[in-house]
Length: 492
Ligand code: ADP
Image (cartoon, rainbow, N blue to C red; front, side):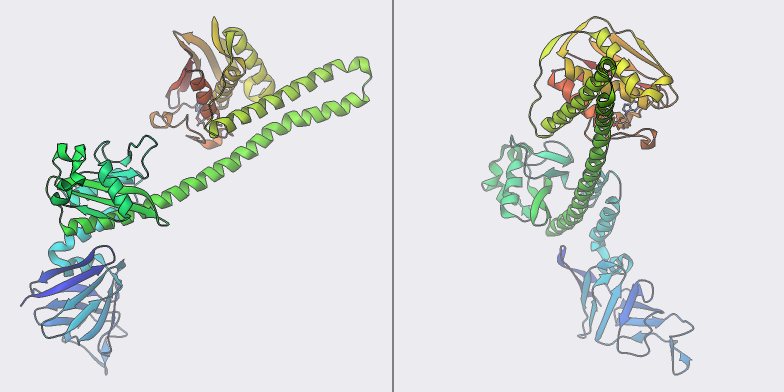
């Protein structure tokens, strides 16, 4: 005898499947499953529940303390009465089951994969897929992993992708995952306007919406666009098209996947915001620390000057000018950072500069400022010729690249500055940078590798890159972990 099991889920909606009456284990009490039933013979901790064509059964599995009734152990299975509730495992799925004789079994609230998969028979494929998706969310590169599993669960989905919402200023879609150009801007706008998940079928696509050239060209007959939301705001969309219409179940599955993805992406955003706040606090701390030195020097000089006769004041005055110059330079750099952060372009006043002299001066400055670190280091200056650049800004670039070369060469060694065709190169024999980390270095607040090697803000290379780009030039690095790095820049 066959009967139906229906499954209700907030996102999957209501689905039903045939149950062929083969004895099927629904769950075991005590292992993530509990049973609430007024029958005193039923142990809430040591039993097994299964269904067959006759109904729903409970069998005691034996225990020392609860599966006994009136002193004798239950040997026979018990047929359960019409009013029972089961809780299986951890998932928030509920199963309502209609039996022919009016007996009703509800698996309410939380239900485990084993019990549900068994109860659902064939449609367990979606359930399995949801578990697979949940697993994918723990991967570091979770987006490609999730899209792969979505594709496995719904093979007719053609290149599922995740886009950011709203689109970029020029109207183009920004892809967070999946292949560029695989989503339709028209359908995404439509779903965003409706503010809900959309299942587009062939007729709808031909009916107006299908006028989007991308849809006509690829001959798509079905599409699913599900907004990703956080705090009722759409920040992205899970999209897929297909050459065949999607089923309602495919759609429900996409909705479930989008719900999981939205939760994961918004927690990622919160994590990034927290990391930025931490980086900002770190930056403020280092910036104030940097400024404290020259200000302290100025303070000391003024005190000494007060007590010195006029003829002995000259060297102290020179120190005073040096310290206030350093403080001013630091402040101008912070202003540059603020300008870039505010999205404004940096102004460049270029002039011809003697490269060798510039390098020489920066190294002298570094020797004075980073006294101890520099002692272990030899600098070979092979730079020659002139460059056309903004003096203060190019000094800043050199200062940042040199101080990194010193900072990240903990054992000392040699720093070589030379020109290779259009490139000005600074080579060190320090800790080096792995290939994957080389991509990230020039972004704001990015610190890579072993952070304990040196103090830093992660802003030095970002600022250097911004200053070089403001000149219309290029900046880059080649490096090998453990062997050293060569940072270079070129100017037009
Ligand atoms: P920081 O203030 O941390 O030095 P930067 O933006 O100057 O910030 O550099 C970013 C990261 O790049 C550093 O944290 C470091 O991991 C790496 N890096 C920069 N220069 C070098 C170098 N010469 N050798 C090895 N690693 C470097």
